[in-house]
Every structure is written in structure tokens, then in C-alpha cells.
Image: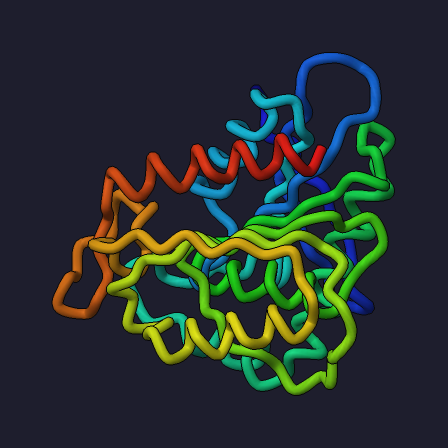
Amino acid sequence: MTVQQFDYRDGDTVLQAGVVFPAGDGPAPAVLIAHQWAGRGEDEHRTAERLAELGYVGIAIDMFGKDVQGDPAGDNSHLIGPFLSDRAALLQRMRAGVAFAASLDRVDATKIAAIGYCFGGLCALDLARGGADGVVGVVSLHGMLDGNDLGGHGPIAAKVLVEHGWQDPMAAPDKVLVFAEEMGARHADWQLHAHGRAMHAFTNPHAAAPEKGMAYDADADRRSWASVVAFLGELF
């Protein structure tokens, strides 16, 4: 399957998405993929290909801007920091991705989901918290769970799945509990699957820093993807 590159915009910021279309000609559900803190890359494109094989339009969206890339092995706090301090801008950037997806002829605009890894997991969760037309579900994989200050108190319409490594220092058990309370208070249809031995970045085969709480876990990777597939199947 071929990854096709499309430019789109969030206000004056030019962004670029990698899109993989499934076989066939008719409209299909779309799944946005929000990237980790180094930016959109081959990992997100491979996920888009896997989603297209399942019959969905896989769309690796862009949070940072066209041609903006971090260092996969370095510190990319400067890229995610502005969004962590301005969650309204983060939500707007995610909604721009949804609007782009809905504009594609091959996308059924009433059936859009978003999944995200690490920083992208927070992006997917904030999309559920803030809402967007057509978004029926979101998935966070080893993502940050911190709530935002945008004042959302009403029911969350999108279904929520969290795949969480219990040993993840970025989402310690106290944060998990706060997240659970938030989901309950907002009457969300939510699930949290805790992988007991897994750390942060458990789906990334290149993660190998257990002293920092980051390591690949083949079992958690396989199990979490099976869970994502089942979740999307239920949504669509």
C-alpha cells in the first residue's frame, strides 16, 4: 500500500498528513494517527498501512507543521511544550486533522476515530474531551493521561480506550485514578487496559531505556493492538 502525502492547514500553519487508502472505491471509516513527541514518521505510516489492511482510511496526522521533525533519540520537549501549556491549541490542531479527514472523498465523515502514541495519546484523549463532529472513538497507547483546563464537564460522546503500561512513570497510578474519576464524572464509555509489566513506549521496538521507565514489550504490543482492532471493529 502506498502512503500518499497531503497538505492541510490549521489557520496559517501548513501541516502534512500521510494517508493510506484501503482497497475498494466506496467511502470508509477513517482512523487518525497522532504521533509521538518526535513527530510524524515511518512508525505512524506503518500504522496507517495496518489500518488500511483492516478496511479503514489510515491518516498519520501532523501536530508540529510540515517538515518539522524532532530527534527520535533525543529530547523533544521544545516541540510538545507549547501544546502542553496551551491545550486549546492542541485541541484546535487535532480538530484540523479531523476536518481534513472529513474532506476526503474516500472517508465516511460520520465514522472517524483517532489513536495516538505517547504525546499522541494525550492528543487523542483531548479530542474526546473536547469533541469534534464525526469522532466516535479514541485510543491512547502509553499516552499521558493528564486532564486539561478547558472547562469540559459535560458527557464525553466518543468511546475511549486506554492501553497503559502499569510501570509507566509518565502516568503513575495516582494519575490513572484521577483519569478514571474524570471519565466517570463525564459519563464516558471508557476502558483502560493495564499491562502489568509494561513501561512507557511499550509498542516501540527501539525503546530500550528501562532505567528511565521506557522499554519495548512484545506481549503488551501484541495484546494492545488486538485490543485496538476489536475496539475499532465495535465502533465501525
